[in-house]
Length: 437
Ligand code: HSE
Image (cartoon, rainbow, N blue to C red; front, side, top):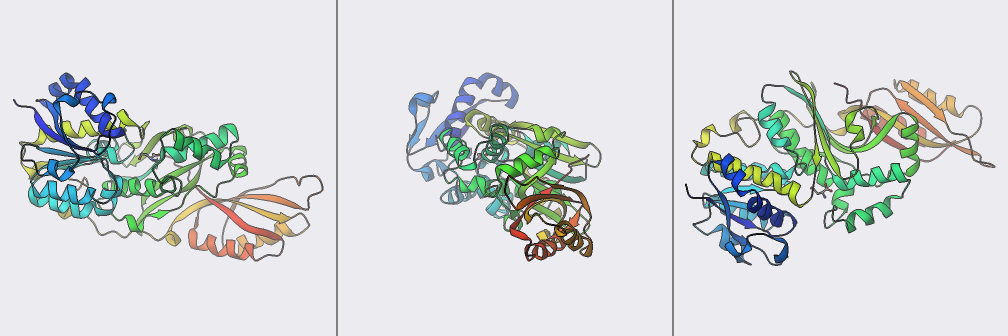
């Protein structure tokens, strides 16, 4: 059988890795797919020719639309990133009845509903394993491996840059800015690192995880997104003293009222496996009603780890080329006409426990006043710790852990506490998750 002809859009880090993995493992891949998979065409403005195998067999152009409109090409691999022209190229490929593989999380999170609808009409596949957690086959696991389950919740460390920063802050006591500069130099961070540290990259990925977990349309705009830029060295230390680690988590959970979709720094018990996922590594914990908790761990970025996911999608597409479009794995795990309109909850309606840190005057009655506000708000305190004042200081840090409470209730209590004369500056608040099975 003739090899499947692939057109690569982008020959950068992931594009080059994809070409290399396909060339190096050609034989094994063909044995798995049932036929060869060959990059015949590529579009790129700049690339490092020395680092890419098999370039002599690839027809290269600077015009990506030329590849998308080439009748010889059967599968388009979009590795350009961003919204435009990536969206136009993907839509044009679908219009031309070509299958698409993409690593573009932003594109899928924001425009996936429209892209999948167009693909369904044309009977083509759009595969996006590489868009979430790089080389970890989390889409495959959730969409196929867990299809017997009612998913209850999923929580993931899905941004390597943020995890690298928090790990270095904890292990080496380094400052945020210093570690971020290193992550940029090492090539982990997005071109605009605010996309990593403000949680936008993780929110793109969580949007996709949530839709696949619960069979709801992609709704990036409703995903709550909070970054790690406010986290201070002292919070990392205090969390550690209390037996917790701070991780930048994406959490999605089905409740009686709707679906939680939130990305924010989170205290998790240090004894959980996921709390020990360090550096640039990613991990996703998924709780199914039948299987219980399952954990998926691996490299969330990088040339060949991401290429591993892209090539796995190519194998899937190659195998399914001759299948009836109605009988393929649905894009969002559930049949398109079975997607549910369960609401995505506002943060005010989300219930979590909290870590609070506040700077207070070191004098009698302060603790009682603060405890009184919590009592009046119906918030139960799990632990309180007062740090010893430094020599000659009249202020101390007060650390409190609460039991689970509605966010709206906690916001009101925090506003009252911040209004007290004996409380200096804003209260630092970090949500907590037990992630227990
Ligand atoms: N900037 C992303 C990260 C790359 O740090 O995880 C992979 O999406």
